Image (tube, helix red, strand yellow):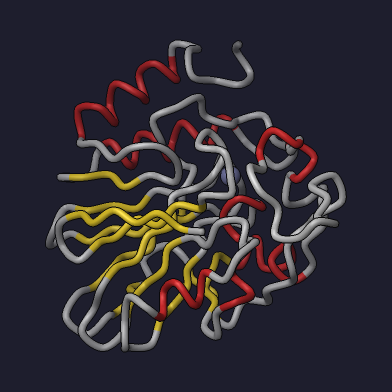
Length: 237
Ligand SMILES: [Zn+2]
């Protein structure tokens, strides 16, 4: 179902145990006084909303960093659904093509939710946004605040959430410690470079990325340098 791991500042990572470790996204739960955040929602093959309800008693805002199948599959399970307007149509009308399900194969799924589950035809349920976020917007949890950073490149509406007080940023797929996907149908590598540089300029303590482990500013800069040199690029294998 879900593995959980706790981090500083009321942050918990949930991982879908049904999805292979190299494909599943990091699902982040952030505690606030008046409301909590869920940042990204995984494939949504199981009930993420039930798992989150066991972690909190306050209302939950779900924010998707972007609309790809590994991040937005569980978004429909939440009443309050935020994302960038440039991908609003994908969240509302997901297809295998526009959510890049065509990258999937059977090795990604460790266990399906039912005997007739078929990853070759699966797509996530529509999850129309209930609110749009854009660069500079602030998400207020009552006692803590997250600024929205619009970081296009991997996808046109990719966003990160930045908490200046703790130096924490949640990056989605704009920057993670792996090969960066710059080759998708709506990827723009030139924008991706701008977004990577913007993230590296933050006075950050910790980067909680969309996949794999968390790290600090030095590692973020190293990953960016390696991307710029052609390593870590799907376009420059
Ligand atoms: Zn993605």
